[in-house]
Image (cartoon, rainbow over all chains, first blue to last red; front, side, top):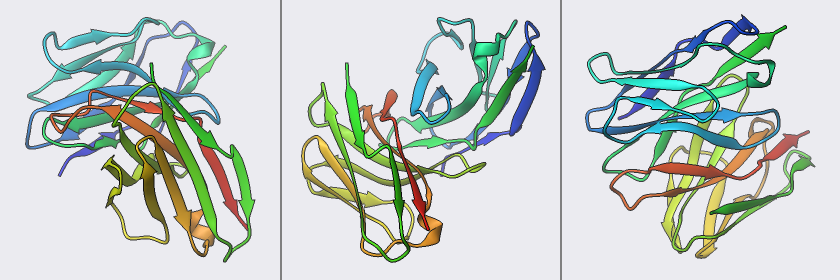
Amino acid sequence: AQSVTQLDSQVPVFEEAPVELRCNYSSSVSVYLFWYVQYPNQGLQLLLKYLSGSTLVESINGFEAEFNKSQTSFHLRKPSVHISDTAEYFCAVSDDGGFKTIFGAGTRLFVKA
Amino acid sequence: SQTIHQWPATLVQPVGSPLSLECTVEGTSNPNLYWYRQAAGRGLQLLFYSVGIGQISSEVPQNLSASRPQDRQFILSSKKLLLSDSGFYLCATSTGTGGGQTEAFFGQGTRLTVV
């Protein structure tokens, strides 16, 4: 069975500092990997995804994540965060033979001025 | 692109009362549909998913049920609510045919408080 572990429940960081949100997964088959962002009282929005090809994927707002198969990780990074990045971030995995997407417990990113 | 409508946005219900949350999808046909529950600090728990009309898969035993009476309609129900049913309920649809789900689209959610 698949599972997703987000190692940090909360990450406080100062504006313009770099940030890394960690995600590890377990699966016995090939996977698709995702990061979603959730603002208060809203649904989730896709931030970026890895399906195949280049292991480094980027979002339009400066986030990037790297698929590391040997370490079964898909950490999310941003070199300089903004106040507006404050939100909850979810890592997720979907295997190549199923209909389900499994989500991690979420990491709350709090950017301070 | 796909649009998911969920209602109501907030709901306060007494213990023991029935529940019906509705979700409809626009912009796609024959979608895979999902109900998730989000509790504080626990991420998203998959409750039910459906790959077609009348086809429901339950992920966890619980006080809830789901139905899919039409292709783009997904309903979450309960006959008698428990306090533990409180949470933020999210309807989602995804693209994929069993070869992996490439992206999920979410509704705005329903915050249910059972009192």
